[in-house]
Amino acid sequence: MSPGLFIQLIVNALTIGSIYILMVLGLDIILRGTKILNFAHGQLYMLGAYVLLLFFQTLNLNFALALILSGATLALVGALSYLGVFAVLSRRFTVSTTFSYRLLLSAMASVGLMMILQQGTLLCFGTQERGILSPFPQIIDVFGVRISLTRVVIIFLSILICIGLFFLMYKTRFGKIMRAVSYDPEAVTLQGINTFWIFVSCFALGSALAGLAGGIIAPLFSVTPSMGQNIIFMSFLVLLVGGIGSYRGTIAGGLLVGLLLSFGFQFLGGIAELFVFILVIVILVFRPGGLLGEATE
Amino acid sequence: MLLEIIDIAVHYGKAEVLRDLSLHVAEGEIVTIIGANGAGKSTTLRAISGLKSVSAGEIKFNGKRISGLKSHEIVRLGISHVPEGRRILAPLSVMENLEIGAYLRKSKKEADSGFQNIFDHFPILRERKNQIAGSLSGGEQQMLAIARALLNQPRLMMMDEPSMGLSPLVVEQVGMIIKEINGRGISIILVEQNARMALNLAQRAYVLEAGRCVLEGEAGAMVDDERIKHAYLGG
Image (cartoon, rainbow over all chains, first blue to last red; front, side, top):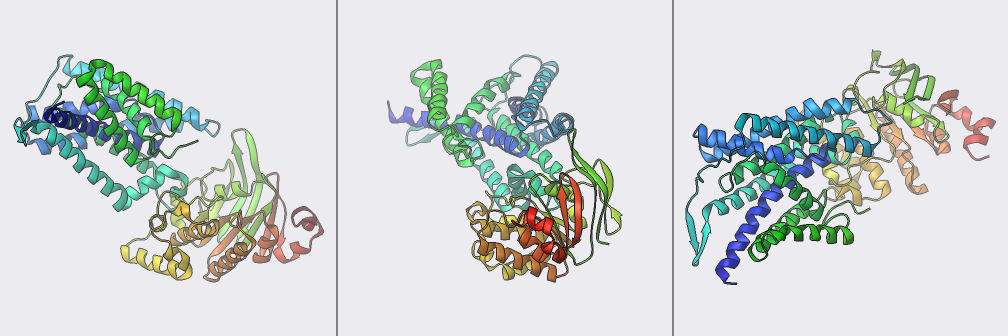
């Protein structure tokens, strides 16, 4: 393998990996904060791409602004979804609704939400593929290796978003409360904090991350109503590889799966995805909590 | 009267876990609730702090009805609850736990003076402030839980089994802390399996059995009561 190809494959791996990382960070924040396994996460990603399309292509806004707006719009969609679906559902829970049953019911509700968002998008936008012209079409030359600037920008923006997220979660009071609620909402309520709005915020933040991921990827891949279905299962696998409840695990898992897919597609073709499943099985057998996850029992 | 509970009942599903329970706490008092496992002691505290809704009767704090309010609203009125098992936020640092306890403080300055006060009383927490709370010893975790509740600026503090799982020496230390908190004018409801410690600290006591109050009175007199000795003090 030429060094040029090697570097290109690494760049591709980082591109795919960063999208998975954004997706899975969002899934994980929602799962731990609200105890909802969000099957609609892929559709939120898809909507993020459509919103970017709208702001960037149709309304001709600047890319960075359009991206921020897709994050913000999806935060709003997430908050409304939580209020309209999951908050209503959780009001029906009683003391005899066990934790695993709650988890199952809210996961089922999220499947319903997934279908609504999916079909709604189909109705509004039709089945045809759309795409935006990348605002960064240049090819950059790094020591003789040709790399697409779009991919570099995607990686850079993902890193920026991750840094922002960690700052939010670890340095601000709001983030600390979200982490606390993920661990023990009742103990947080007892400090005078209205945890309901923290649940809403966790769902909104997770959705915003999905929206940003969809918006970031739009200049590279075509935008279709089905793009969410393809990514959601791979995101769940990354979540399992990295481990629930560990940001470092999510990053490691995203990069590992990115590398596997990037090199796999180059040398093995479509069968590469099979190796991701094998990786998941191997990891679950030997480390049931994932690479760096907190759940080990 | 600071806290008045009038004939409350609490259900878990169809099971009635508290029935016709009445109880009161005066300003500045230490009141203890003792009883066997499953007698309804923790449920009583959970009903007061709004974690569990009452199905009959009412709870008044400072003359105002609080049953029916949400937990976070009740804390704001001045009732802090140190729940069973301490419930510190294990993955967060000690300082972050305290910051969350200080959520209701209006300004940063007010929060900082609260932390200062806590560190003066619990120097060990200052030493450990950047450590992950889950890495503290049982006694330190209990102090963190109490400190966090104090930051809520309560007028009434409810402690559920603060001595659970602690060595006798640390239990004694916790007892001193409870006395000291009470000395600042904060009323206390103490729920304990360790009835001897509880009766020594409290002025008055309630004995619960199967969700009903079977005895109430001066704590000092109860230590000598034959029935209490037999049932809760080990002979």
